[in-house]
Amino acid sequence: MTAGALAAPRVRLGRSARRAAHLLAVLLLVTLAAAALVDLMPGSPSAAILGPTATPEQLAAMDAEYGFDRPFPVRYLDWVGGLLTGDLGRSVQSGQPVLGTILERLPVTLEIALLAVGISLLVAVPLGVYSGARVGGPLDRVVTAGASALMSIPVFVAGVVLIYLLALTTGWFPVSGWAPLSAGLAENLRFAFLPAVALAVGETPTLLRLLRGDVVATLREDFVRTAATRGLPRRYILFRHVLRPSALPLVTMAAVVFGRLLAGSVVVESLFALPGLGGLALQSIPAKDIPVIQGLVVLVAITYVVVNMLVDLGYTVLDPRTRAR
View 1 (cartoon, rainbow, N blue to C red):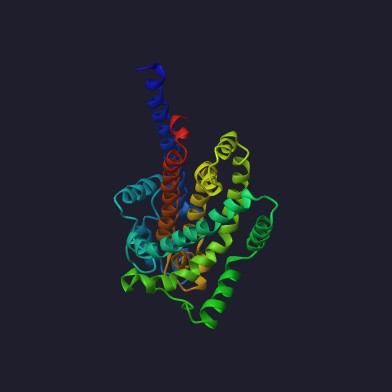
View 2 (cartoon, rainbow, N blue to C red; view 1 turned 90 degrees about the horizontal axis):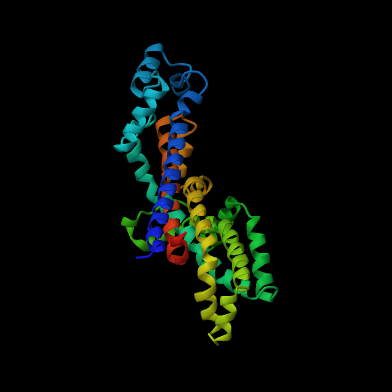
C-alpha cells in the first residue's frame, strides 16, 4: 500500500474532526447564549414574567421553581444536563414540558419548510439549467426578469395573493387551519400547500439565480466541451455532466434556506393560523416564557448543525473529489 493511500484516510479523519469541533463550538455558544437569556432581562425575571401585581411570595416561588435565583454557571450546567436527557423544563404559560410542547408543533413547521424547499428546487433546477444553457436567449431573459420580480415580493404579500386566488376565489384550498397526516395525506396537503408555496415564492429566485450562474461557468469547462464533441445528447450533458458539479453551491443554499424557514416561518404561520413553531414563538415571546424560548433557540441551532452535516455528506455524493480533500 502506498504512502498516499495511507494518508488519505488520515486526511478525511482530520477533516471530520475539524467539522465536529466546529459544530460543537457552535452548539456551546448557542447554549450559553440561550441560558444567558435570564440574565439579559432587566430586573428580576420573575417580576418581568408575573408582572407588577406579583407578591414577594409568588416571586420567591418562581425563582425557586425555575432556578432564576441561582448563579449562572450552576444554572447553565443544570440546564445543559437536562438538555442531554431531554428535559428542557416546563413552560411558564402552560406548565407543560417544553420538549413535549415543541415536538407537538415541530411536524407542522418541518413539513411546511420541507415542502417549500422541495417546491423551490422543482422550479429552480430545470429553469436554472435551461436558462444557464441559453444565456441571453428569450427563455433566459424571461426567467431572469421573473426571478427579479419575485425577489421583491414579501412573504405576507405572496400569502395574501395566494389566499385570494386559490382559496377565496376558487375554493380549492382552505384559507387557514391545519390537518395532520392522520387525517389523510390529501387533506394534509390541502392545508400545507398554500403556506409552502408562499414561502417558496421568496426562496425560488435565489436558488434559480445561483444555479444559473454556476451552470454558465460549468459550461465553459473543458470536460463539458469534450462531452459535446463526443456527440452526447444536449439534455444528457446538461443534467449528467453540468448539473452535478453546479449543484454543490445549490445544496449549501438549499440547506441554509431550510434552516431559515424552520426558524423564521412566523409570518406565514400567523397568516395561515398554523399550529407550528412560529405560532409558539409568537405566544412565548410576549409572555416572556423563558424555558420555551430557550428550547426553540436550541432546536434551531441543532437543526443547523444537523443540516450542515448532511450537506457535507451530500458533497461527497455529488462530487467524489471532495472525499480526498
